[in-house]
Length: 414
Image 1 (tube, rainbow, N blue to C red):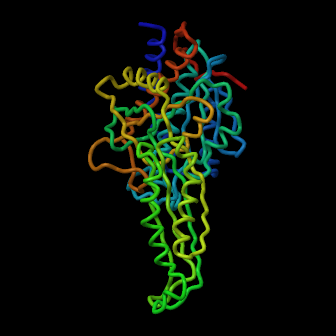
Image 2: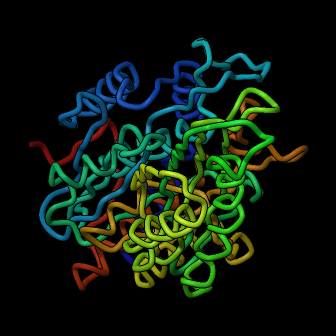
Image 3: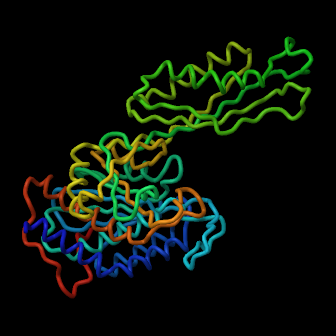
């Protein structure tokens, strides 16, 4: 058994021993969800647990979210979890249901946070880590712009070689891990279009600007035109989510609105998406005579998994769930602000299977829940990934592994 294997085995033992404590943490977080940039109680809860383990977490400058390091020296590997919840009612009849009205951990961030806390505490009990593991408990993943942009701007990733994260996947059975090289999630921008005209009577559309007709042309023509301006392999789509105009059947309105999202799998195409769509909106609107205003909000970039980082995840997953537990993860057109980390360093996101049987409990629904056995799988996967990455980026395998008995944890202190 290599030194790396011994370190991984020590993590496995820690995860098994502390399963009930981790489940309790997850249930506490699930019952006390907090929205983006308001995760003060969550941050305090994590901070206290880390300090009790002898670690020295520091808050991000927004006041929520934490950074804590375990080990010392180079290389530095980043692990990230998101800590915010969604503005949804918790519809589950469970003892740990949300106690906060219209706020719910419906995307699994409570699991992500618990997993990273477990990884931090487990690694803190290992001797002679071959470098530093920087654990980032990130706020505000569910907003635009989100917490990842603040993490990057604050220099939290400086000096690190690569970053890893995982995300719950209710389509995968517990005990499995989904991996994919390249784009795994899409960029997601928001586009709001406002059309204006003089209004008029529906009996005489030739005397005014038929604003509803103009909206209809944008709704149908814009996605079609866009598809002929962009390489199909870029995976770019425009889908309208809201349209609003008029109040009377016989009156042509003076104002109308369209709101939709633009999603792109290719990072380079995403950079030019705003300019392209603004141009196309103007061209289509010009044929109708309507005045147009476009409000375009750049959201999150695609998460494009680095091949070398995925290989490290794969090695860790093989040791965690075995070859039968590996799955090829499909691309998702959903957004995830972990992609912002790729502005600084190579990244890789894995899918953590959470389905324990019965009906599939989909993300972003008030009924979402997980099989809590996934927590231990996540701890073992991320911890082993960090160990593999440290060894690979240092160019050597670690030495002197052991789990110090009787110690609650030690790590690099700032």
